[in-house]
Image (cartoon, rainbow, N blue to C red):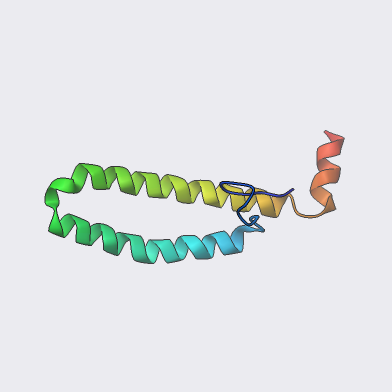
Length: 84
């Protein structure tokens, strides 16, 4: 099964490893940016909290897509799906 995150023009997700790598990179950079935002504008806390929640929701969606892509690779998945 071919799994894509946002559009047909985007590259297909081909497993969980690349997704985890992308999430790890994001988790290394985003919190630094969020911290700087909060330091420079403490009043932005409410908006920042929404941004953080949205980021983690998006990462969860990416992880699920990676799991689905990996689980559906090969003929075993197709054969199992046909049996049900």
